[in-house]
Image 1: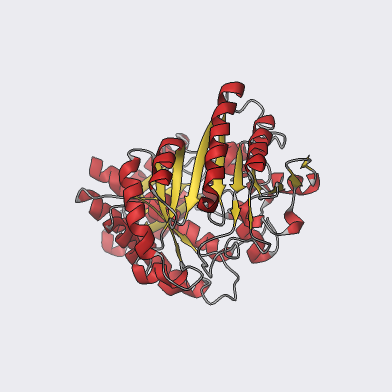
Image 2: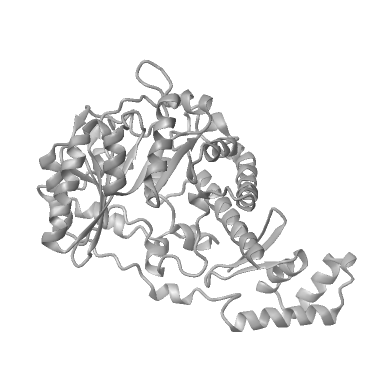
Length: 457
């Protein structure tokens, strides 16, 4: 399967099953497209008719097709998907590698677009106890098999409302590392309101990654990210985030924003965050009910496509000026990347990744928490809803007929099960707007890589 496209005057052909990326001129790009399903003779005739102004002749076109044949023989063009048939995902439902600990089902902000119902997940406010947190780590170690590297995300609500518990659980994790020859990778997501010197120093010592929530420009951020009295949080959190990142050194972090129908011009928010000195940026489309006033729809796609394309150009411009930044969705490894089993199976929700509530209940991921139909077990009992776990284990790229016809299939593995469920009522369904935005991001990421390699010589 070949996908040909043009972004910002870069003409690109992606060979889907080999992952090879070819940068071409517009004539060669069309030849690549036509030659995939057409004969040599038909391709030459169509090219002559399509590009009369180029002065093409049959000899030159046959030479071009000879080059395409050589690429095909080398496995870099028109490659086969036959290897996928034997590459079933290697999912062992008895092995868990990551937990998302909901240490606080409470929040000091009241963001109206929050998928978690202002942090309470449609339930009662609650804080996870230290004992439950330790039990979660014991559960993870016990179910991690031979995996040595384990991941734990501290999530909410707002986890800093339960900060002493977070520190105690991290300390316990360090004890378990020595006892069981494991390594924990801890991550914290925070809205920043309660960040202080203790939080900064501890996280910069113990957390491999931190996710800091900032939606961009002051007016955009303060439209939704308000406290329970309706006051915006921008002026409170930005200086704290700047100090946090400045002291973080080379450890990982992301400034993560959310864009809605209110700020379709989200590039301005990314530029604003970069101007504040942040270099690791993420801006996510809102996930909300289709009838929500801030929900994104198909009518917004043209504007959003343009924003993503302009973002790639902005990143190139700033890199040339020595003030570059990284954008999460444009980080792509053309040489290596995930193994084929990961590309087929996706994020691992419901199998190797689970979310834990303050009460110790288990769910497939944080976006399912609060929906009793998706409760998969408890820390005390383990996985009891084995049918649900099997449903998630079988929810792979190979089980999605629509995805198997999509050129982006090996980049998204069918996408987010939670988004699919909330959009279609099935974890194997399609969230069409999300699919289209994902594909545009991949095109722009490939264009950006092509431009960077071109400039590197």
